[in-house]
Image 1 (tube, rainbow over the protein chains, first blue to last red):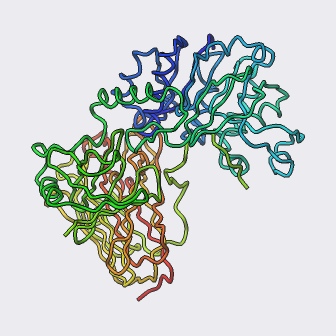
Image 2: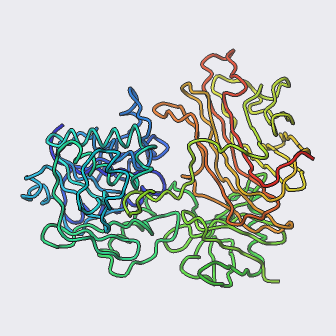
Length: 370
Length: 211
């Protein structure tokens, strides 16, 4: 292991757009650190996706290839973070969640005295961690009054902190089914791994600040450093709403638009009637007749579908549409300015019912106006 | 009690580590014997069987192409699992099990844990009905659909997900999706075992009973 770098666990339709925005922002801020983008299998990162990020100094690492000789029990989801931390080629790592992003070049963190003192910087979560929790007894770590860790960003010197890195890997990659019953995902596994192995870490003194769906993390001097957009993520598959107070939002949206334009083989481009299969053409022509009531938790609107793939009359969430039709189903995807906002399946009597992707429970229905 | 917090990815995909016990009606889609007649490709509740041809000409590289799947289950006991690809259609029916309310659906894919086997679901929808009216369609994103894949470097031989309704008094459900099977025989004379490719659709219900 050698050098300094950034590790971003990402991949798949949900996290790749987030990682893209994070990478582009890092480079726009002047960060020159090499970046590793970790993913689980080729199904999470196609050759096309890889080609998009590699020009920005990004090396894509398939965790399944790294794990091929000795696969861990848990790799996808949260556990890929500890796995990447164990196996990255960098000695000193800034690990960033894909849905996180800095607002200044974070390279200076590697030279802060707090990092040099301990070899690790963790950032705080909003809540403390009470003495009643079973995790203290289970780990044998004596209770101490301290804030929980928010692991959307971590700075680690792997050589100095290897016992903690390895123990966190054991907790996440071999026994996540046990530890996640007592901790919320990976985040405090790192804290307990450090405590259990007698390591120390530095933590900026100020608690994070909140924006809607976003946690703002500060540096040791109190300056804003990271915006962890844990909800309402950057997405081409569901609507990304504006978050008041989110820094660099316009720049991020430019990068997202750039991804939309360059990622030409992504799912759900607008309907192209001249290219549609006969079954899809028939459904499309039925849709294009008349107007429809679109009802969701956001309200009701009257929309019409046009054979050029456009939707008229809706909100910013409803701009284009596309169809997937097979022998037993027709699925209508309605996309807004950013991405697919709704997916609906066809019922009887010109009724379509569905939901917002990635937002289970956010229902939508579409019914023809007679 | 698990902590709450904000770190890490949201788990909106409803993957499950294994199927839940106690399903009322189980639909199985398997390789079978590729429609030649002895071993079924479609099974409902372990006894009602149907045939389907995945690949008309045996080749070293097995690929079913996209096959449409529909599993209809109603409280009255009319249950049918259908596979369709072009003009090729196969189905199995069962009317021996009735229910009161449909409370959930689980869908999974599995391949025999040898390299170079793949079974992918896509466009999965669970449509829940009450009195013949479509009330809810659970449609997850493509990243949430079960995929078993042992083509190197992948080594996931099983994946399943839950598609629960928000209401607990639905009286019918229709699960639709596209299933694709692929594998490498290595030798043109090699034939897969019937359950080398094995998908399940489980329907959970109250008052599950034999009619």
